[in-house]
Image 1 (spheres, rainbow, N blue to C red):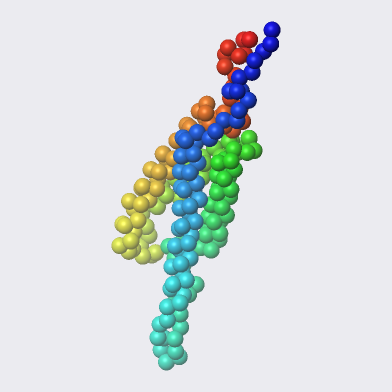
Image 2 (image 1 turned 90 degrees about the vertical axis):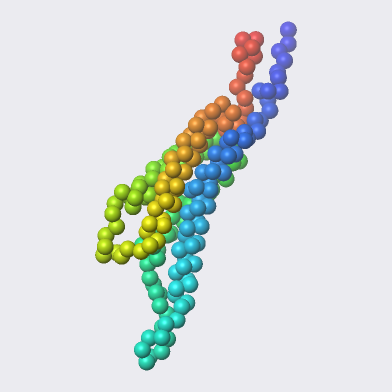
Length: 186
């Protein structure tokens, strides 16, 4: 009596579409958007530092050089950039599926970044802005965007955690399918 092996247990599972969607959504939320925000802040800083203003009889000086755009300092920009690039590397590793530990690393990173993003967006929504910092019409304009980012930050990690714990995603990261019950008995 010879045992036959099926191709199901030998072949490497392909990446499921739902996993592709989960990885792409999390990379966009936690890498692409923060990097775009950093680029926006840096371009606004660059623009204002190149604007000239006639300042008395001494000549022309740059306005807003060294200014603080949107209350974001250089160290916070650097930290956001490092975190975004690190998550991009994790996302690429999760896309490839190797090493096997990237499954757990992706889940932990998504949950940690989601908690951080929720805290960062919830505090300005709940706290009233101090009058000393100034009030602009842009404050009310940014409120719906914070709420939308908060909703996305809740939905994307829920989807990522749900789908990455499903059988097809676990099989992709494991590198093989589990044997069928008939194969285990025989």
